[in-house]
Length: 514
Ligand SMILES: Nc1ncnc2c1ncn2[C@@H]1O[C@H](COP(=O)(O)OP(=O)(O)O)[C@@H](O)[C@H]1O
Ligand SMILES: [Mg+2]
Image (cartoon, rainbow, N blue to C red):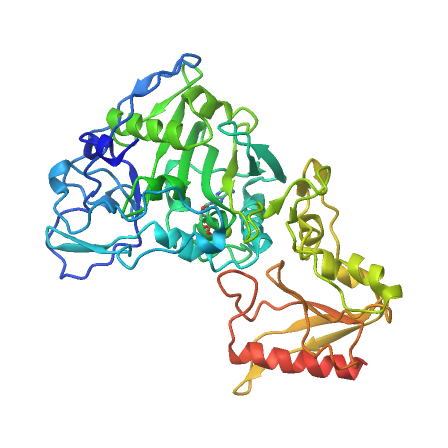
């Protein structure tokens, strides 16, 4: 489809548009709303679903003057404005209509012209987000498994809403037969507004102290780091009201169509309790729904409404299914996630098996140790990702439960050392480190600390003392340091003075233990 085909009816169609928190750069009091910018738009003919009888239901008429945040507080998504709103500065970008590059580390190259811009309308300025931001944001995850862990975190955070499992597996994109990544849980799922927040930036529902997520960015960074496109199916049940929502965050769609901001096609369905059937749930109007569905059918792996809805069949009454497709390739041109080397039990990172520098006789013991395997074997990494596996919760990888593994359980000559970091005479927290020798020591040239934060592994085998220093060889520790904060990709900590003090203390601890 060419850009010029994409005409006329878009403004009515009301695609969801992801916004940053509205940043007012002008004094308040001007009224008005976030505008919509794609001027040439072709609403594809809606293919009729034959297999499902879904009654279209009209919700309240929305005022065309309503501000975009009008629906349930601070929604980040443009709720559909009239064509006359489209008086701003930005327009569709023609800079990147070509097929996007398949290699993640090259897919962010773009000309200077394509940047997030600010639209001015009716006196209000809103910060818009260019699709390229999806890629830049995702580069915070250097390591593909670090990205995948974010999606596991979201499932684990759902334990408090009843999640009993998260299933990670390969699935097939029916559009072209290529491999796609599936992450599915039976947690509380997301109601339509929750789904919009999930796809937006910086919104986290998680208020509980125990929740792993907090920055409201994990879903976006992780999915966009693993593949160019993601579709989410979520089913939510509350007070007898069941909803099903589908959302698509597609870098391919946005780049190919030359959008200058992030729009997210979404559709919702709601259970009609009297008829027992799922019905279209119009957040806006009928046209909006049709247009969104049409986008989903064109750009997702599923080309009909029936195929899309089929995806809910194995979700049940609550839960979330995330399918990442058009998975990124590495610099050698191979799909980064390797589903084939160990197809029965594992997902690996292509070409990431590191050489272990040791005596030939010790090579295999070293290579097989979890400290090395976790770098390329998802099963190994997931086995230590959480310090404690929540009760009645399992991680299932390729149909088989991931055995939980606590490194502390395989140490010998164990000691427990209490540390209370202080700043200005005040105790800032406390942590007990379990320290010991790996049972294979001294054959292993592995050492370091597994540092968890709120049950989640942040630093695996953090080598606080240098490998060149033979003191400390084979000494490993495990600790849960909740008094320091992880950085956004959850693969390191903020470099605060508390973190530096911890580093110094762990160094001393290693030598004292030795
Ligand atoms: N698997 C899931 N089940 C239910 N809700 C989810 C799931 N994944 C994401 N969400 C919702 O989307 C929001 C944003 O997710 P994310 O970007 O990972 O940020 P965070 O986890 O820091 O809140 C979450 O706060 C949660 O409300
Ligand atoms: Mg998260």
